[in-house]
Amino acid sequence: MLKGVLLGFACFAAYAISDAFVKAVHGAVPPYESVFFGGLLGLAALPFVMDKGDRWHDVFAARRPVLWWVRALAGAVSNIASVTAFTLLPMAEVFSMIFLMPIFVTILSVLLLKEHVGWRRWTAVFVGFAGVLVVLRPGFRVLGLGHLAAIVCGIAAALSVVALRMAGSEEKRVSLYGAGTIGPLVAGGVLMVPHFVWPGLQQSLLLAGYGLLAALAGVLLMHATLLAPANRVAPTQYSQMLWAIAFGYWFFGDHLDWPMLAGIVMILGAGLFTLVREEKMTGWWKRARLL
Image 1 (cartoon, one colour):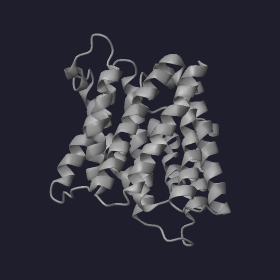
Image 2 (tube, one colour):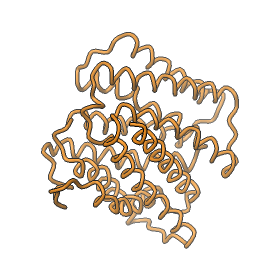
Image 3 (cartoon, helix red, strand yellow):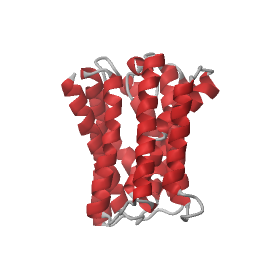
Image 4 (cartoon, one colour):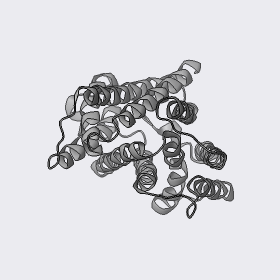
């Protein structure tokens, strides 16, 4: 199990470095163009996530097509929103809002799955949103597109997780991964056509790092969940905040004040509690074949 958890940390380190690469593009190409190249390079991971006996058409051959489309569309929205947010905001601030995802999962589970949620998880929801108010401080800070994009990313990611939860173990891993890759690839490709910008050499290298590292992270996540229970691997995603603070400080000149740090701690605590409570109450992480 230890190897699986360590692979989880390696996976989310790769994701964080991937986000740093796309932030370093500094908006030189439109977000949807970055997402297109990320999705294109993400296809490189497909041979490594296929089980024995899988075929290439299994990427699209979902047993529950509606859920495949939900994950594809949610993946497109979350990827475009995350690139937009990372381009405009400090990395730690973006992660603080994206990490509301477990809380959004709880809310969507009530609305879509009619699941009962007790007072402990509702308390975590309120604490998480209070943390967002501390981070954003509306009325004291100028809020913009980046903040909206980060929250939209968290909501879209939560919708994708709920769809995964509904699929359970019925879908093949390659189909679940394919939906999350094909959706951003197609959406980014369509949206970039009217205003395509040829990336320069530096931008091309950064986009290559963004896509390939995300693909590597997907493969590492798959192997992590094969070696350790998914509910033990999932909390390692919060290690991304440490990478975000380090990258933001050393490479992008980001500085976090004490109120923002306090809000981040509130959000992380609420998210971790919700994640643990979700697993305890529903056991859904154990049924998931891919996070």
